[in-house]
Image (cartoon, rainbow, N blue to C red; front, side, top):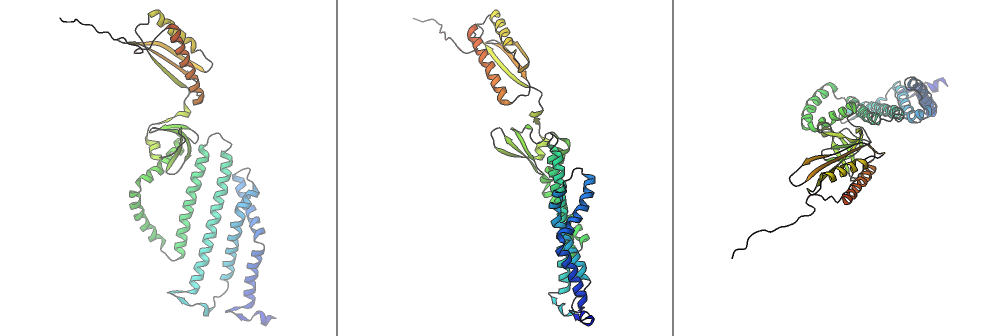
Length: 363
């Protein structure tokens, strides 16, 4: 039996091959349980930072990539204990098969590790989003999505650099070359970089958040999403407009959701045939009509005396009610003013005109 186990197979003793195969098979069979055990250890560390972490959700999200990473890692370490058969080491286009297999194994390990990191980021983002949902402010949700995507890009870039290093590229010289190329690209993509910087300003300065009603550059609508490059607005015409973040920061932006009141303005040009007494009654009657539960303050006064009319200014302010309620109230008050004009027989300037022709007939 001992001689049988010491028999050389593929330049390795048989017992070494069986031991390596046994370790790999053991991890393969118990991969699910081992990965869930290690996921539990990681969960304990995460739970000390983020309270109320769901262990099942964490295991479902992380256990699979963690088990795959452990299986690949153990397999590579175990296979490394074996000698590579000399007659397998053939040269293929300046590379021998041993180096190719070693590089492929390294690539698989790197990819599995990057996959694990990405799933960890997804889970942490999910926990933070649940906490952010408990607050009325939607800025936290957008900030979490922004940094989740940003971290994924960073990890993806690091993964690509590690893969290039596995292929034998000199990373330091590559980074130096990339820095020069990046500077040239940055000049050509200046506008995109400005929009990216503006997105950071929006997230931290918070001139508006998702759900706010804003007006910028003749566009009025509700903010639906704040991205890395642009802000998406659903207009009052139900269209979907993307405004570059740089314009959202540099332009005059009116956040209508932060208004404390809505203002209605009514301008009347009354004809000169109205007497002072009639004007006084008219102004007092309008003031009486503006006494309403939804009107917080109002003002009515004779604004100006012109050569062809009397200008009456009537304003009232309401709480920040919906635009539908506001328009309904404004319509009601306009109709009431028209009825008052009918009762007091007040005409608007230019509503009626007489044409008189005077002159002498010459014989």
